[in-house]
Image 1 (spheres, rainbow, N blue to C red):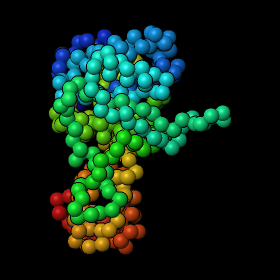
Image 2: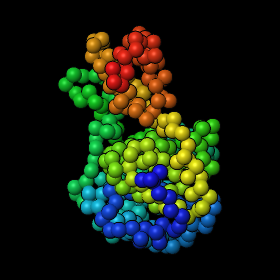
Image 3: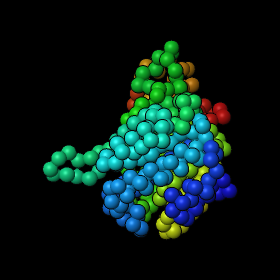
Length: 308
């Protein structure tokens, strides 16, 4: 945990203590002002008070970002357009993407349509910024030799399941985010040893992901109970991230040539499942169904090993 720090305090105060132009990536999941119980009163602001709070921390986020830095911010529908306006017109950051996180289960409604997504804004401090596309590609539906065998751009609609209460990594936090979402952001917008800041650390997901991806990270959390929760989480044995884009488990069609297929299968583990060993069984089942291929665990030793 030498490169991972969790700070107890108010982000609007603690962000001011961070050096300007020093941070590579900020991933923020601020309170949505929906009245959720986070063990404090920071999700029950009045409208103007909440906008002032947002303007305050976003201004500090812009200040501490490097010129090539990136900000991702989760936000609910009630305030996301206001945050967009603050970032775009007031702070004058550069809009890149409006990402939709689609999930299959959520709040049920009997009058109106049940919500099944959250929104994520991606802004950069400058026109030049890091974006490691090869690190976040997804498997293609069909393999074509002329295409990039490494995979395709995941697009701006991301499907990740919530961290369900039956999941072994589920924390006692009302809005815990899936590790797979944060993994994609960290891989796309930072390099090894870069500095990542999470101003609203909550259950510690960003810090846990950065710990496994060899990034330096600082989390700020106002609730000391969540700080303790994060410290315990960082000390736990890592068994793979708790969520994955279901497209990562698919095997491209048209891999009929055995040599090409075996080379691809071997690479697939490193490209798409490196931190998702718990998804390997489903991947193996897909291979078996598509190509009548023996499961990887049944292959001769070395054929599909990472160093084979």
